[in-house]
Image (cartoon, rainbow, N blue to C red):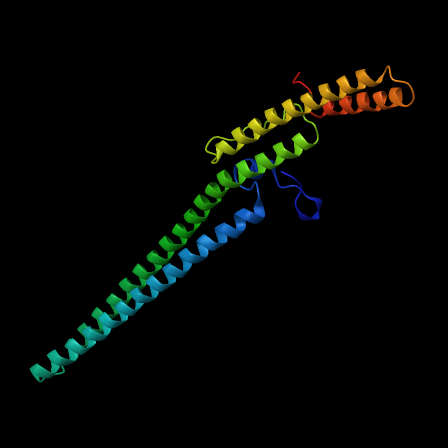
Length: 212
């Protein structure tokens, strides 16, 4: 993983277990978490509205009972006040517990999303590094994937491309050397052209040397 903005590198632990491509991962994790938060807010609003409706109905029921009895005794009003207070405390406790559970769920979802995107972005970064090393003539451009990484077939295809390019470059180098051998005995500029062909053949072979 390359340096981040400002020339600083992320800690090795983060690069090895969480953030292999921060921009890609943060974008997708933010989207997933944002959707989850929106759903939880909507569901929480419906829950609070249900609690409010229940308290309202209980208040109406108390008024109806009092009216039917024709009495508004002090002890009945005190009992209703205590019951209402107790219900409000239980509702507040339940709301707090649900809020904490929702926060824990969001954190867990974010952690899972980071790991999932890690196993998606990791192979893409590995393939990118393999192609870069191939362009630089690395004889062994293999970058092994981590356990759990997805899209392992991309590495297989890159290695197949690497083998094909090696055969092509070796074939071109052999052809250039044969042409150089045919031109060496010719008068004039033949020897100079043969030298240039051999130099080009050497460059072709260096592009994909045999593994040590």
